[in-house]
Image (cartoon, rainbow, N blue to C red; front, side, top):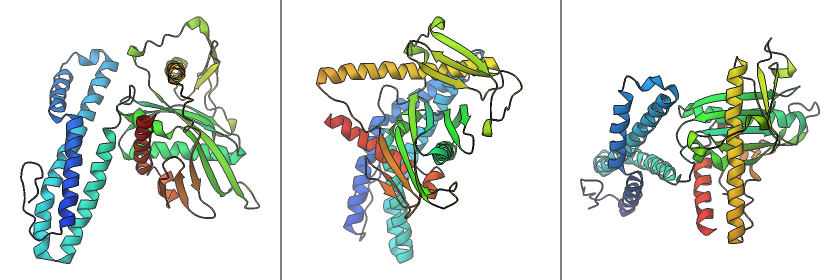
Length: 381
């Protein structure tokens, strides 16, 4: 007898290991349900549905988008938890039926149990995102590093990887700026991933990403190592009080450029903001109008200034604790395409032998292991 959900089910002659595993899954899922607070989540959904039904909601476009986004995220989260509970409650019955149908049916039940374990683990990781800014949208900056044209190509490959990951999950992406390199790839790019908790999820990607491969740009077919930097920031909200004095910002306008330095706009619509006190430079050229580019660039500048503020606060706390700080955000992952195939996270030791799938956006395993690693690091620091 094992109590899963509301309906205890007798497992008959099913192997005791299966019973024990289902019991462990039930314990984990109950913890998830407790952290998520299912009843409170239902109450929150009712409140958001009431706000969304207000015909005057769209008088404030930005607030309306926040409400609808929060509602969609809350509904999805509740549906995921309820589906996991339903699947787990059905597992004992599935095994009971499989016993009568033979080995193939038992193999199918085992496959469903493995899939369920993975899905519960993924949901458990979500409950670990409890940082001050974790629930926000993410602002991702990618810059090519050492490695010449290969590094520029590598930076563009990383940009595609993150955008494909977002698309697979149904998350919105807004590209603010892409600075193309002369021969191939990009010098840098800035884009937002618009989904609740995308910052908390993607923040573990911050650091240097290293690629080893046979260079497609070397006519002698030599192996090349290239580097790219990934920076992940939380999108600034009005409650952050990041005020930027206009007198501290120099505004330059110029024509947008595409691959190879070609002008893609006949007007000076691209905008470069330079924050004089900090030296931070932000560019935006992907919108059609100068005003839109300036607004987007200001969002990015505010996010960078928020990060400066957070680093200063962290440095003060580390000084009080006598902590030298963590250097995990430096070189954090290697992608090897030659002489063997492997992607390995240097912090968590998590690795896979299918780089093409990873570069096509299959990075959930790395994200989950990174979030678990960060939580352990925070607990021991």
